[in-house]
Image 1 (tube, rainbow, N blue to C red):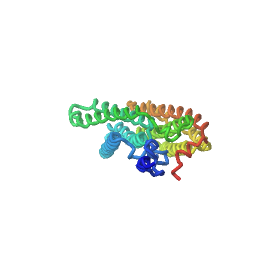
Image 2: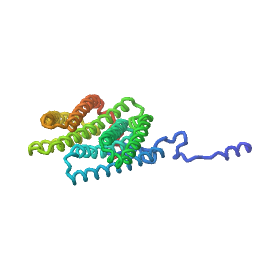
Image 3: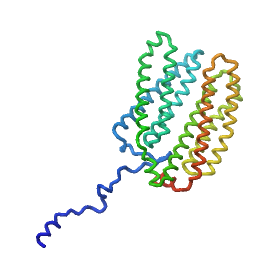
Image 4: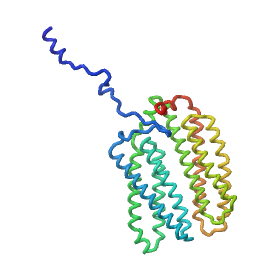
Length: 326
């Protein structure tokens, strides 16, 4: 017995409140937000943190250049720059949405938002190429450095964001658990929430294109367009709350609110067709038609996803997402 006692005495007694290394969670607790849980900043890798900070800095720099360009165009009131002014306003709205897309895409591992960010960057690059190609030789020399910087940063964003999209996504498992039904519901919820945001951006861009494409707009048309902007924001807010809070009544209200929007699109298309016949330049008109078609496509995808999402309401996903937010 004396030979056994030293062996017993050498054993270390661990604190029962401290989990063993094999039982320690691999991830930290998610942070609840009004738009759903997000990963803590400390959980991101160093490379992702650096890219996220670089992306925000580049978007803020582009925002400053866009605001400066809008101020210059408003100061000189050049009629030849009417198209550029309209595109600059649309670009300004797009940059603000891109800040939201990259934030939600990284912190929530939302691939839809990352794809939207990539498409927005590609649109900026295409616009830069078109604008640079129509400049004179002197103008190209003045803006060559700016053009090269935009293209290099754009290619870098597309490459890095594509790598983020291809990374494994664990948020559905961390939020919904091992149940495949909850994981599928979480995916549909994110898809619907993203589509509501995309639809809002498309509608705001469409209204901007119509408002700035004509200088002889009647007072009635201006009021209708202003109501359309407010209606689009209200519809997006109702749709977001309906999806996040699993409120079937709000889902039906959201669908009803989309009916006047369809009529609003018909009115806008009529306005575009009338101006198309009277104007020799069709750039803004074509952009308005494209925005309307994109918005209708988004609404179709959103309607199909909402029908499936409503059928899975009440399974406990909302309680998992907002358990610690009360």
